[in-house]
Length: 159
Image (cartoon, rainbow, N blue to C red; front, side):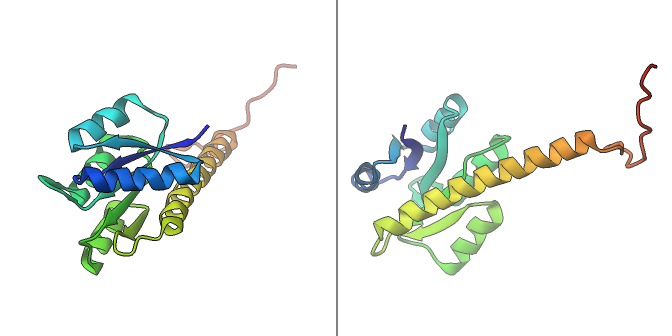
């Protein structure tokens, strides 16, 4: 099954172009959205979205504002990649501070760069989830109370 990637861009032609890059890849499927509200609604009902690719300039909104809304609005949001033609170093820094996974320029867009960014972001998210699960498992097996940090005596076995 193809990896589902939500794509939002205020330019429908460019969004179709990006979607065609995914189609040529074969392992990615673009789920196209045209507004911030549409994307947020999609993320609420579709947990199979594994990554979001968004444009910086979304007309009324900015990609930074939308990315922050996604990060703030979901407990475990998918990774976000900014794809922009208007970017600057300052915009990239702001994006990374918000928690974006990657930043790809539309200028001379290299299909393989975008695909690698998406696949890398998804792989890092999976690694983070595995690490968190392992940490939780270790905490539950530890003989320390996770709230107080105090030693918890071993449960005595009836004998």
